[in-house]
Amino acid sequence: MTTRSSPSSARRRPLRWLAIGVTSFALVVGSTFVGATGVSAHGWPGHGGRPGSGSGLAPRTEFTMAADGSSGATQGGEGIPNIDSVKKTIATYYGDPGTGIANKTDSPYIREMRAIVARQTAGLRAQYDTAVAKGEKPAIVLDTDDTTLSTYDMEVGDMHFTFSPAEQDVWVQDQRFPATPSMVSFVNTAAAMGFTVFGVTGRNDDQKAATLANLTKVGYQGFTADDFFTKWTGTGSSTQPSYVTCVATCTTVEFKADTRKHIEQDLGYTITLNVGDQWSDLQGGSAENVLKLPNPTYFLPSADLPGVSEPQLAPRTHFTMAADGSSGATQGGEGIPNIDSVKKTIATYYGDPGTGIANKTDSPYIRELRAIVARQIPEVAARCFVAKRTHRNPAVVLDADDTTLWTYDMEVADMHFTFNPAEQDVWVQDQRFPATPSMTSLVQVAARSGCTVIGLTGRNHDQEAATIANLGKVGFPQFTATKRGTQTYYTKWTGVGASQQPSYITCASAKCSTIEYKSQTRAHIESRDGGRYDIVANFGDQFSDLIGGSADESVKLPNPTYFLP
Image 1 (cartoon, rainbow, N blue to C red):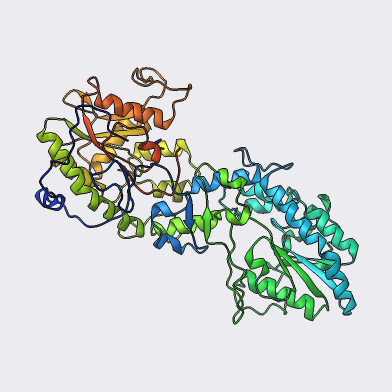
Image 2 (cartoon, helix red, strand yellow):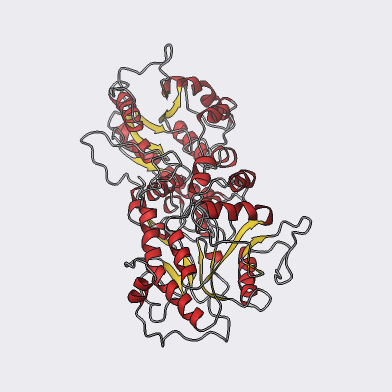
């Protein structure tokens, strides 16, 4: 995995005297130039205020995201919530220190649940008395997962946000789930008050007995087998009931709405409150009131019933999220980008049909990279050309993963967004990575225009030869370990044998940060011992590839698939 600027040399000369136009220069070096957006800092003089450019090297914090993933076609890579930041935000919300296990005593989630339940409990008596006064039998319907039983430790600690039905069944049959915070007291209060408590869950009939036992084990009262509805398996006597009218595969809304309708019309109850953690638990009517509980750990969409319009039962689309996960302490569950929606948005952006394999021909990502590179080519060409003509030994520095080599298929299809260094080494040594879209053209133009092409990656020394070979195989012959006796491809030390931390790098703690390693390496490249290069442009897909100076221009490429602070 890669770990990924301002001028630092007095020998640099300002470029404002350059008489040649950027577009004309692009034609001279054989490149094509169109408008584009991107994130760059310390760019071509006079361009600092244009859209997508700026002196700040920091991630976005405001996002617009539709729950169905469609925003991946419109927002651009920097406008998609980064999945690692989403994970950190969710962990903060659940009080998870990074183990995948939620804090069971105190967390923003526990406090939010306590406040929600307190408000709802305060209205129970009035709901009950109103129903009884009208001669009705008041009832409450509750979903199971993350409504009465908490699945966080399974979803995160065990499955790492990649759902496995077989593993879920192990948890169900073993009755491993703790109660959802504050919900035991709420349900027991309602039952003691006289409400009939119904369960309506997407768990199946084979899981019904274990689910009821789990609910009893964690303290719930009021649930009974007759009043607990699970989904049929289609095997033996577990068949679709007559009151569920859908054909073939029923949607969540069809199953749950028809079951609530059965409770009211056939069993004679009035559902005064329907509680669930998914909007699809609540859609479809047959309840006087609904209560949505927060859950950013998965999203189960389902179309509403035909002819039913409930626009109020829809996910948020605007989010504020800090890259470090701290927003999990302030935004509340509905204000955290749902991780399943983030995954779908990323898939749309990369043209992934759901296989974990990116489209290699056309996608929003490919088009965005093409536009960024088209804008950068004339700027880089001009910088390289002018610096070469003025004997300043120009160079461009580029990160590897998702700057020159594209890791999407590994990150998603193979690792499912859970990084595995051993598996990554297999991909590296096998040289499996395609080129990052359009970047071969940029590197080719930089080299033709007089720049030395230098690699700077968080991959380690043991991966250097395979990385350079992979680069050559996919169209980057410009990368070599050395040029004219000077090192031109930098990988990170392993700490074993001769692979030790170089003397030009000093770090605040035992383990160097990405910024310490990369910024000090760039300073070394510009020093006499490093070849006295003038880094006219530094390219990376992580902000940590770029922060720390020693480059005339820093260009951020989009990558929402991981975040390396």
